[in-house]
Length: 271
Image (cartoon, rainbow, N blue to C red; front, top):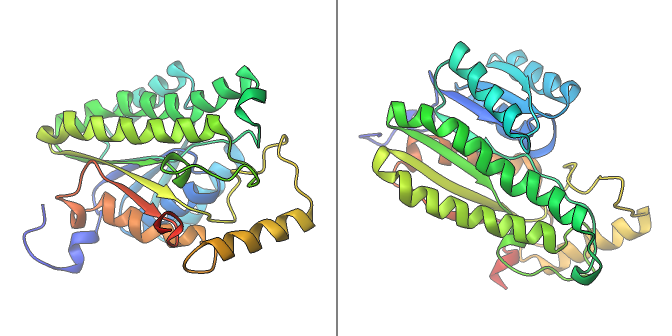
């Protein structure tokens, strides 16, 4: 815990941070930021190419990073990640549960069960599995910070005319909020903080790029214009704008913050 106000409150030197879905989008932003502030970053993703690129970006900027391929929805794969960490670092100070998918727009009564199950497996079960596997490191250290990625879709309903968000995605992200708050209550006494970030519309990620999501340039232009019109700050966010919040939650600067869900949405949920 920081005892005085200083820049050092935000530094992560000597700490180990694991980031899921680090191969692109927000995961890459989080990995870069954590590495810049001194953490040794374990970049995890289901695919190797983007993951290796992220690690190279971190090391190229003078940070420390390595990679591990894992499907967060696979219990055995997540357990293998924990075993690898135990062998190589034997500590985890920061866990960013960022990996997530969307399956496009389906009204609830038309939503295929397999789409429901797939989103739940990655976006909620994956968060649970990673927390369950890596919490023992933090318990041994009696300190740690877990940052779970929820969404504004987990806080409020989303207009059915907006693509990429369906009831499976919203339900999973709402579940992440419940999981975050319960874990904060269970592990606060062990010095472990658990918080969630609920991003709004940050363009430039791969969330909406699944093959099932179709949008032509005209549709996308109209979509972005609508987002800008409906956001108090009158624009969409850039993924890099989340870096500061992640560093705050990972570091001692937020030493008395736990169980919170912070919307990073340009005021979308303020209307």
